[in-house]
Length: 307
Image 1 (cartoon, rainbow, N blue to C red):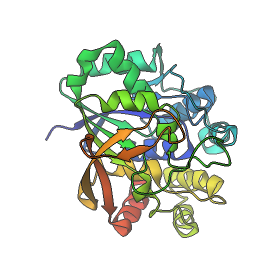
Image 2: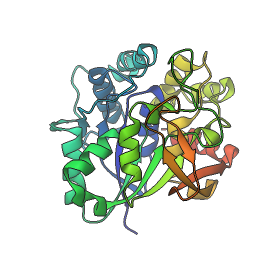
Image 3: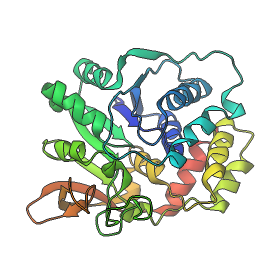
Image 4: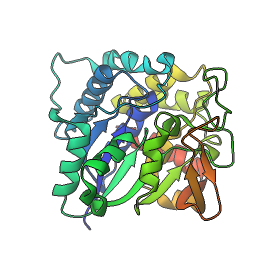
């Protein structure tokens, strides 16, 4: 059975690195590369941390590319500085050299090249904003035919967003950050015919990162990957943190853990609801992860990181 071709596009948040780590453990997946979109991070440490993680997982043959796109509404600096922390974790700095290559192309050009050269349609696993995807499609419309589907952590459908009004004046609280960073690009992707499978806040709100699961990762610390995962989650445990990107990525390995539901939607690009993914009759049809077997998911990630 041929492996599923996957190109990952993440934006450097703590859970983006963990989603990358999970993807690298999937035997039926052939990762074609990692694009780092500079949204929930500072670009340089995010790229560096990604390359070091691939080194640690003995996946240094997988190329990394840095996207140069920009969003409309920057992530808070408090969130973005985590990229520096992860890049400095001792477990990622046991060697003075990084083997995983950083390609010379921009992330958006790398995405175009990978899709054009792929022998069959590729799944885009996107755990940040859709900006790099939108720019690549704008530059090379022909690549749409090479995208099998987009699995995306983003949006909030029937729950409030996570862009807090206290942080972002002029917001009504309905937006999710991966949309809000660049709603115009999200709306552009909505105009395509590509199948979109969303992992929205509606689902992730029910799958928190708990002390219990972090302790379980720590008890597997004889395994470097589980030790790193536990350290990363320990950084964020004081705040409300959820399995956003990891939950979305696990879908690639075990879609049977999930129930999908179809919705008709649109992306709001202006006004108080900028960044909202709104359910509207006659809107763009997408699939949203609606339910998940939480215990199976928790057991799966602990098993995969025990290496």
